[in-house]
Length: 249
Image (cartoon, rainbow, N blue to C red; front, side):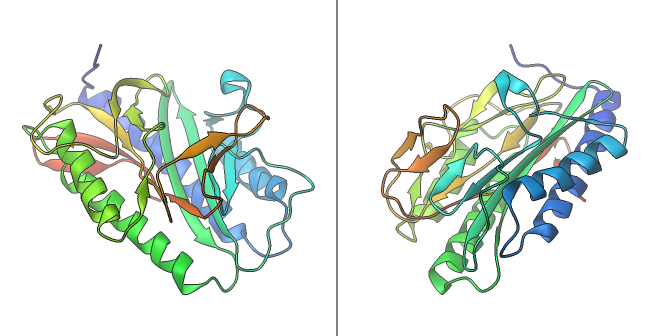
């Protein structure tokens, strides 16, 4: 069932989103060669808890950290580690959620550590643009397929692969609500969007091929090709005045 949010609920989600976004940016700014992924996770955890919120991911389905931190070919759900050090030229995807007064904000960003290759930089730029295009399509009267088609069309115009096994989602008093929000689709098809819907749009774009696989840790998802992937995400409210990004720092 899709839950339409009231203005009061969206206001609470905006606060949850602001905390999640600030925590994410604190983590992004902490990324540097030599840092461990657990150090980045600690920065994020401490920001969320010191601002009156709870990390959405910590304990969710048994996940052991406040943030998912994925490097290079890791697409999503990377588990922070005290021994995993970021290296010069890596790209680091950080996914962060926060719960404030019972409502969630969810966002992700991929950043380069030090100097990254032009190939990786273009992947980041294109994936970020995919998110922007997906958000632009999130207006009342459009359909879910319009969001997916916008993301897919732009990514594939560069020869990139769009992950299909993992998608965006509705969000509110639960981290994952209906509907699913694929990053692929046909314009004009799928569920019609309505004011009051709140969704997480999150393109996951691979340098080559759409295929992914899950590692034996039960969480980390990597590209089948072994080549890099990027991930950007915002929580968005669909309103009569257009899409409103709730996860702004």
